[in-house]
Image (cartoon, rainbow, N blue to C red; front, top):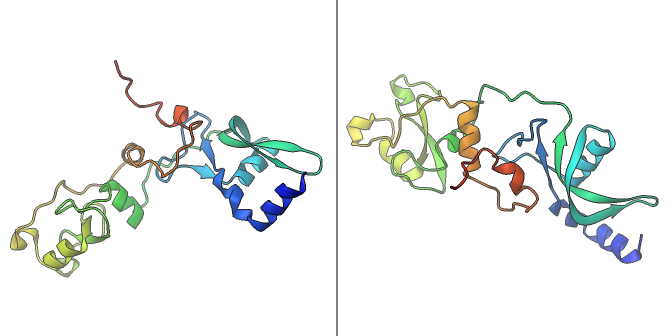
Length: 194
């Protein structure tokens, strides 16, 4: 290993964090689309060494040990299939994803909170069917009143999403960086142009 590489790695250990590996299930689909199933390069190399994954694509960059040089994996596929969860957890992130990161009253994007359609003060419960993403101005305007009282309407009725719904919505929100070696594996389910 040359001294320049070793010195820069010690000075900038975060420099190699820029090589995430796309993780595919044994059926060659990403484990998740949003957030995209990515591992740090170290985890990908460890899994390959332990024979848990097959490396499908690699970056041009390498890591070195005293005796070995390894190209950094960019796409790995699991050797054992992980059964996807059928139930979608009711979390703030999943609620925002279901509502495509926009207010369900006015359509604004950005700084969101959530709102109970039937206010809790009026017996409304915290569930997929009663909670929506809302911007602060709409949430404050509605307060603990009914939609009819404030003259507001929902863009779409809230419902519990399926895991397939969440995967489809997640595909519309790619991460800030997509390595070219990932593209063949991310959009297999997309309709082909005629």
